[in-house]
Image (cartoon, rainbow, N blue to C red; front, side, top):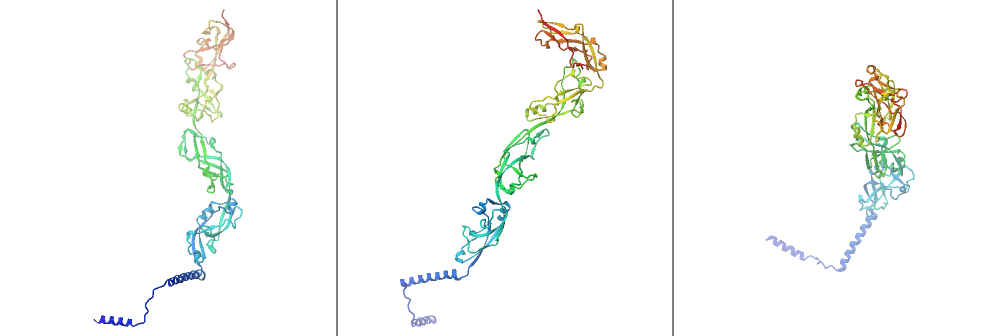
Length: 478
């Protein structure tokens, strides 16, 4: 009840106060309000830009180094790798001062610090001190910008090209067996040089290129590697150079042929021809001695360990198979009659097609161990020499029907002492006599030894160095 009375009294009191009722705003009033707001805004901008002090911002940015279009580029200068690396690791704190209106909206991505390759750069190779400047990323300069690094040392050189020869090939991981050889002195590389682009001072240090065949495999025959790009630059002392400063190395590709040959060392053996019927070949083989260039004497394979070696090489796999099947490499055939006590003969080593002989041995001296050997001369009556395989178209007349023919035999004294002239049977095989016209012919006499003389053979006459012959006149039969 009391609250209602209080509200009524307050309402009565307010009604007696002189308060004017609000009037409705006109269009002119609204325009005046807008004009007042705009004026106040311009006044605030003016004060902020002219009266309020400059603001200062700091930005931490990477240092840029771009020579494109600069004076340094016109001098054909380039940064060396060590300078590029140093610059790539540098950051610069850029302090920029200006009005809030000019720089207030800057962000770190809008600012860059760069090396000035125009103002102080000179046309010289080596280290230069160049200024660091600050700009916007679109190239605009600041009125007031200070980098934390004022100058930076850069090392520059002039890039040129050089023709560098290939002089070496290495293959540390190629494997071969004990009878295979890689012929390093015959390795073929194509091309024989490479064009290298790089700093002139470092180009001068390059002597040659070494190609590195780092393939891991076992070679059994010649192998060619194509489009090979692994190589090193070598100085004149054989040291490998750092190639990081050179720009076009990956463009150099080589074809490398690694020549492989198969090599085998065999003992030298011999072939004996003209052996008498029933002759025990071991009798002569165990006595034969081969004499090398140092006058050392060797035995034949199978008659001791001290045999005379010969090395054969081939790049042909078919020839390799032939060598695999050999236990010795034999000299050209030696007539048994050429072997006499106290004499040595030169025997040629056969040169087989497709093989090489690195030892350069072309012949070997052959002699006998004649410790208990001797010779004995026998005489056979010409009239008792049988003429075998006569041709009925010819007449055969001995020139000395009453004469004798000398025959020399080799052997031990014991064996020769058991042989008499009557034990020797002689004949001439006329089939081996080539008759072209009438005249005198001297076919070789063949002598048959007794079966008990297994270690005796015929020898050529020391004077004529020929086997005994029978002289006869051959005419055409009527």
